[in-house]
Image (cartoon, rainbow, N blue to C red; front, side, top):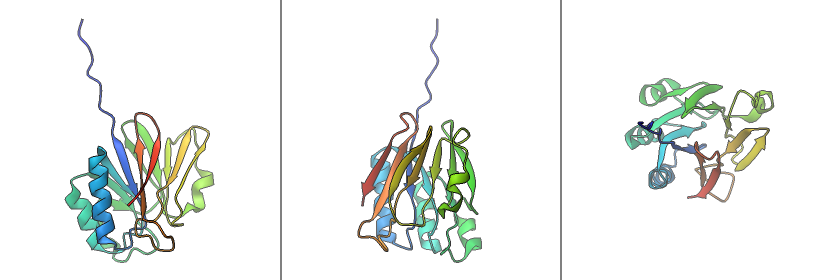
Length: 165
């Protein structure tokens, strides 16, 4: 009797509020790759095409949403997979809702979403509402806070790891 091949689960790297910090973005992507991340989510405020190019050149599959400080949205959308929020994607069978600002977070049905990702506040947060994990990776740029942070979400275990850059 044969066996079924198991689909490899993917870690998702989560960043937000990079605000044109090229070195921090490059370092975060390096760390994500070292930790086995195969997918990258950016929850807004890239600001310019510089960060979009770094994401594209990383080779990671990705999805992003616009933030309130993103300038040339047309240029950004020509470089990476970025849309207006809210955005719903599926990664390894996990449904992920992505926002920049947290204004709609309480309206998300936790029975229909596995992971809710947002940014904007620059404050790192990991929480749960029923079976839904809520992740704000903090500010990759360190603006308004004293730390540059990102997060990983493991699609196999459902666990979140916060990382300081």
